Length: 402
Image (cartoon, rainbow, N blue to C red; front, top):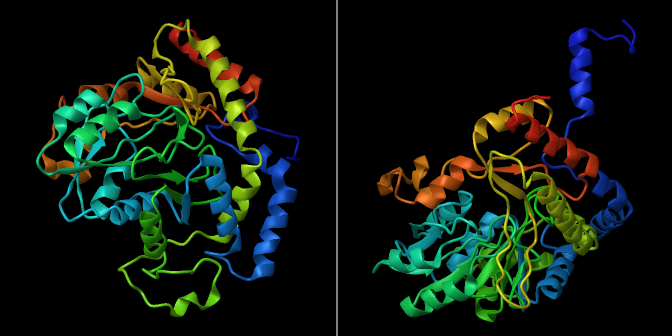
């Protein structure tokens, strides 16, 4: 059989492949940016320092300018950023850290890795973020920190959460891993308390080619501690400094230096960040227009007005759907990628079983876990692909599978 010949099965497979809509892709983005990426990566090779070097220093300055943070510290993942930030803020063994019951596992596991103990709080069903009233009710004598997470497309109600934290003497840190570009009353995510974090996992609004992250803070003392902790506890100048390997370790730190290759990629992609954010907003509006009248869709994303100077940024496009798992299987059969956020709420995760929670403890978190699904969403998504996704969903709920 020559290259043009196919069997019936392979022809069908080829047809599905031609119409595949991936949940995430950045192929077109990298095709556009490759000359700039290549130039920056070559600079890394010319410099000869492949982590914790010149490109990382430049990225930290660029992110500080974009976010308004006084200090940005690059590390090797968003999870490490949370752990190191909590340590720098003085977490002690066994300290209670109030976290949302609905989030990625790292929101809570980072607390454990830093030596604390998660205390779960239910979410607001519209924003998917920690509910301020539920937070106030969950504070206990063991509580010392509160760690809200900004999920999907908008920030938590930071004015209300900050008020509760201040009333109970809690240190507020933000899991702002998904929140680059989000602001509330003019203040960027991560800068409403002691500090916050960014993740540059490839699918994030600003994504690298692998893992990378950063800590944001306005406090110089916190910044100094995070900077030391990321490099085996070495204080003082270590960034882009070859002799720093011999500097004394003043703290029990870790190896969480950011790779310069990732910083080079992020610097290249940072030139398109504002345009990508605008494109994400356009895609979100297009989804809403096409999906709002489809029966079976329980909820579309809503942007809550948090006052002047506030802005949403769509990291993913999350809907709540009836028969969610059937819908996911249907979309998969039609070559459409999805991602379920998050099928097991944190209080029911096996790693927290010893805390003794059961189903029904956090009803809003559990409802989101049962119904939420994210649709294909990235700046490279075409209108034709988006139409295919919406048409396939419409056919499923009308009982006429394509």
